[in-house]
Length: 259
Image 1 (cartoon, rainbow, N blue to C red):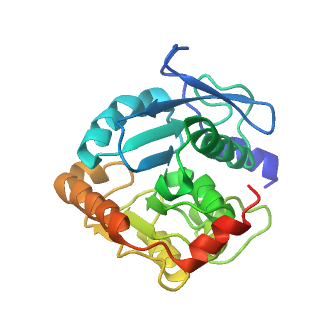
Image 2 (image 1 turned 90 degrees about the vertical axis):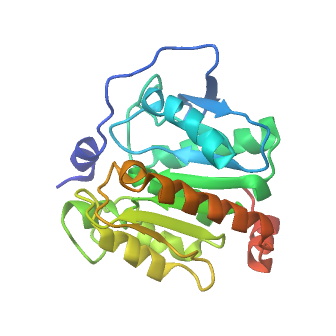
């Protein structure tokens, strides 16, 4: 199957669930696309930079994250993908990489949040741009919810690299130097639980925080199936971060980054 056809099958943007709003932030990507974002500022120490899943847009998640920002006591910045919601352009594999960079740069350079206070958070297909960014530049930590090893490994059940594969997270995660917390359900009907296991195994030594495994959790219901434990474990990870010393390896990545 050709890469372009596969791309059209993979990306499934819904009809926009929101309209242009003066409270939205408009970002310009390196591909000259314009994407909206929102920032929930609660004047907290840590900010989650969220990359959403497939078949959803900012309108579907903003109310949820208003609640989450209170539960976890964090700020939240979420951005849209090209071709989703009110964004310009058409979805393609490389687009989320430009988008997550634009979002991170806005957080760092415009809002003024240092990398030591940014926690990347990717859900499902959002694990692709999240791992990409963490491998490329220093951030305080990374959270992956229902992540995938790669697109072909999901679509075809493959265990090896294939031509035209997309989001090769299983390989890129080896380059990530920040603490990494993975959450996955054992009954995930879209991305098998084995993907989380393989990603944990491929993390650099000392990087993987104990994963949270949701028994009988599916792909889109982890916060429902394990509501209190889900947020309790997330909170414990964030509290651990605030006490944990930043590694020399991560500090070096920050110093060497040209991003």
